[in-house]
Image (cartoon, rainbow, N blue to C red):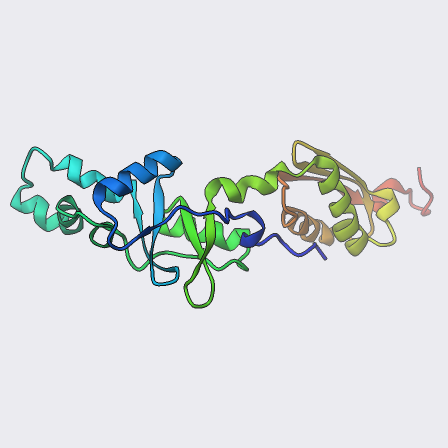
Length: 225
């Protein structure tokens, strides 16, 4: 079977810029600019994550700086109007924070980001203490795996597993993360299984199965043509 997938702790950033609940607005902006980040966890106590403050949380102050929102807009955008008057991280932050555990798979982290429409996640332990941050860019690091490494894993964990008697006759080629499987096999119903397992190998961009029935290369007497 395929190797154990990478988890969030394998790719996350462990040195994290964060602020406390009482951090003032200008300090938050200055910290984001200094460290070139667009969001930061908000911590309390010994490092428990209680929220996240992002550029999107700060923008309403500028948006409503020289005009008062209409009554309709106030009702429609209660949160943004409130943030326009906020002066501390506690008033600005989105809470509860959307987080992920360090032992979550990269696929699980990616799913959370997609569903919750966020670009990065604080990584917390079981009691909510900050362990690191993981971003979309971090999740894409698996696609930096060399083709040779991907090929070796496909041969060892997919081809040898599914086709032990034919593994010598199946050619695996990987180019720019695209895996091509070529050769003859005894049971073509396993092609879809092979494709699914290869896709599960981290770093694989796509799979091109060129596997055919072994009998297609034989004549009626069972002799190879």
